[in-house]
Length: 87
Image 1: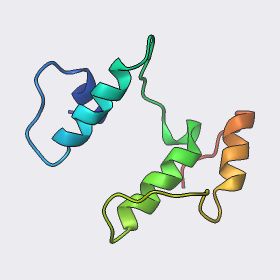
Image 2: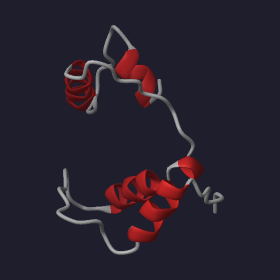
Image 3: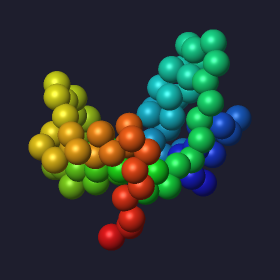
Image 4: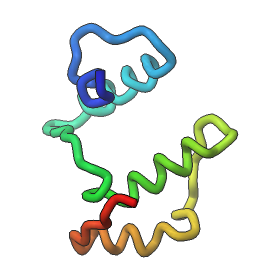
């Protein structure tokens, strides 16, 4: 089951991500309209960068007060609609 499928599912999977999925569902419900859709990493390099950074981090949840080094160019590219090929 993908993360998107888990958020849309009526029955939650058991596991470590259950609390996170419940938080996402509550956040989505707080909006008048919210559409969640899958985007390949080429279409959102900033999110891919943060996911990779989080995966390699020895810490749990991390809150950033500013974009990490190397992310500014990715944010600009995403805003301009530039696709970055998979490496």
